[in-house]
Length: 405
Image (cartoon, rainbow, N blue to C red):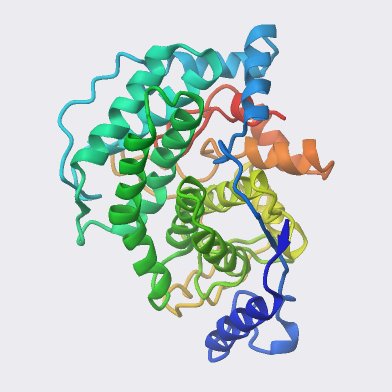
């Protein structure tokens, strides 16, 4: 392993903090002495493949769960195996040259395809059923040969951020575990697609002045680091680390979570977006962890605090809340934590207490790997299992099976 260039790290940190100095940051202060210490992270000399969320050792562990029918993880695997996007019979259909978040449907056509590529890749990895590899590779190759761009009016950074990681994961798994179905030539085309279509949308966001709520930046960072691993791009990887630890945006660990209480930048907005933001930050950490970089632990395990705060509130308990001054200055009017919202589809209150499938992976890291206490996160997992394990297209889901070291 090699250390991040310390001079570069501190220069970037100083620049980021200087840009924040004209307005309050997440802790409600602009006194430089009260800002968190700049963290030091490690970047790999060589990338581990497969290494986007799962390594060969992780895959062997999942195969053991299936072989031994270990509970409760095996029950979760059964939910994954019967899911519509896990079927090798999935029908791809026509692939569009341009994709957009303005496309109709929930999930949209490309979102279904990306999930099917991802989940069939997982199914191949754990079962070695070649039909799943063929289906995942079919989707990957068709998009690599057809997709030209993301609609510039269709929220390209959010599209590339939330969904890019799914397709990158599929490409990583199939190429390195079943190269006969995604050979070097096909893999090069897939990587070229990511560099041509996805990376520019992510770069545009990273280079712009901050303008969005934190789930945007969190998702951008997540797919950025995934594409960096997929394409063996160390410069991208370092940029992802810098953004996560000290970027000038709402969507990183520095600015999304209060280090004292765990309150999140979007806690006053609604609980769905908070859980989305947290999960994207967590996926960034897990990808980095598999490459030997510990982002989970930065700023005194700040991510853990965000999860515990959010879990506690959504389990029905009171949590502290303060009006948040974000880095854009646009989202500073929430004077209390979000309580309820009207669901556009059925008109009922659905926000507080509705859990997305995003808790198992961080619990696996902080509690199982590190022995740290996460009682509220544990309570969420116990309450929700097996409901919420998957079946929400923006997340990987199925965490009791997929993240069980």
